[in-house]
Amino acid sequence: MGLPSLNEPIAAIATPPGKGAVGIVRLSGVGALEIAQKVWRGRDLRGMEGGRFTLGLILHPESREVLDEALALVFRAPSSYTGQDAVEFQTHGSPAVLRQVLQALLRAGARPAQPGEFTLRAYLNGRMDLAQAESVLALVESESDAARRQALRGLSKELSARIEGMAQELLDLLAHIQALLDYPEEGVEAHEARKILEHVLFEVEHLLATAPAGRIAQKGARLALVGAPNAGKSSLLNALVGYERAIVTPIPGTTRDYLEAPLEIAGVPIVAIDTAGLRQTDDVVERSGVERALNIAQEADLVLYLADQSQPRADPPELLAQLPQERVIRLATKADLPPAWHDPAFLPVSGLTGTGMPALLEAIHRRLLGEAPEGEIWISNERHAQALTEAKEHLLDALAAPEDLMGLSIQAALEALNHILGKDVPEEVIDRVFRNFCVGK
Ligand SMILES: Nc1nc2c(c(=O)[nH]1)N(C=O)[C@@H](CNc1ccc(C(=O)N[C@@H](CCC(=O)O)C(=O)O)cc1)CN2
Ligand SMILES: Nc1nc2c(ncn2[C@@H]2O[C@H](COP(=O)(O)OP(=O)(O)OP(=O)(O)O)[C@@H](O)[C@H]2O)c(=O)[nH]1
Ligand SMILES: [Mg+2]
Image (cartoon, rainbow, N blue to C red; front, side, top):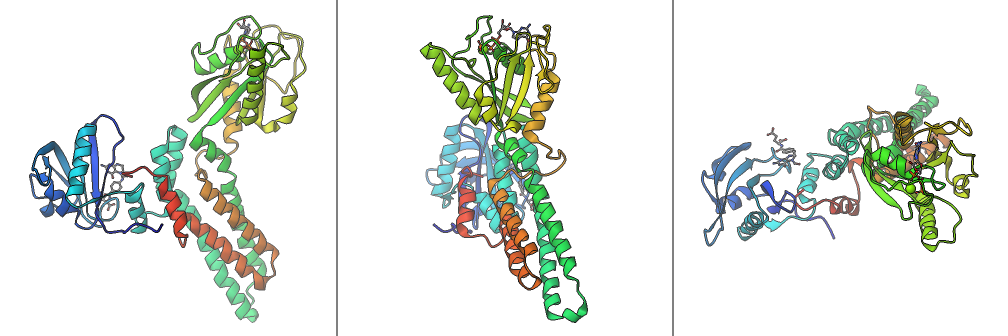
């Protein structure tokens, strides 16, 4: 497809569809100020300094009909988001106004921007690297505090700086190895090279280890509650969300279809799923419910298995043995009642009194985010995780290779790291990144 031309003036509505107090239409490219002036009555925008705004009227460029009273913000290259001359109109936030203003700018000579094209320009003009551009997207998409925090880290170049640091080490190492081969008598030590490789490998692995947490922070997690009828699943769901979301009765088999409820634990968006109690049954409806429960447990990021500790212990369902154990938390429910059994592998909780809830929240948090350190950047982008995995493989190859062949694998590892930053990436990679943006970003 190829990348679009960099200089053409482009325009787009930058605020979401629907009504708002204010809406923004942005315009960027060579000649942006001239185009803006064609739809403007007020101070001459072409004479304005960058970083200033002024109040005026937006007009249709031909009919001269007044479309809105608005603010115009003027940006001068290279001091703008895209690095180009740019104008933003801050209008009244009506979809009708925004549509008309955009149409007027298109009549005046701009073309509609493609998805992500403003940020693409920022990237192509060197105002941000590819990882930062991806963080802009992640930030716009962030729905939880954990996602917002991680995206902002990426935007502030924290990830890029780490990658650049590693790339620099590999670059130095390549020079070092060259020296080693060219002047063996200089006594440049080969084991030095291996030490550096091991260090970079350690850092790559360290970053990769944060990927599961990063993925969860970005996308959230599904948390399934399963167990025998009457185990207290619906009561626990209600305790987790803080209101009577699910029907609770003393009758086993109360929950038949599954039920989802959103909540947030430690800034991570979670969908908790209450399911039908697992048992053999001839009731067709209940049987479908049990089947669904099993499927939901298979697909969940984390499964809470509930067993009533006030009743004689029942055999656990087969499913429990099949699930990877790091995806299961075992709960002994109704901890407010006298116990009929005790098992240290089960966390005691009571949906009724709230006993054990803080420990449960803590356990969920720990399982979902693992040991990923709080104060650090997490890899939350699939493309970055893949590039790091590639880099890791090349580094392992390099460590296994004789000195005279190490260079090739180091070079390959360096390229994988550089791809994260958008250096020497194939055009289709860039295309793919920006395709996911919204128009106007
Ligand atoms: N109205 C508006 N709000 C916005 C944006 C925008 O583009 N427009 N942003 C878009 O995502 C974010 C802010 N990011 C921005 C980053 C750089 C520049 C910019 O013009 N930088 C110039 C001038 C800096 C200055 O005046 O101090 C520069 O860095 O040279 C603008 C916005 C969030 N809020
Ligand atoms: N004392 C006590 N009773 C509880 C607790 N949790 C649930 N119960 C009671 O146990 C019964 C079943 O609770 P539910 O939450 O409906 O159990 P469930 O696992 O959803 O049951 P099904 O939907 O039938 O699979 C109800 O009478 C609840 O009041 C608890 O922590 N303590
Ligand atoms: Mg229930």
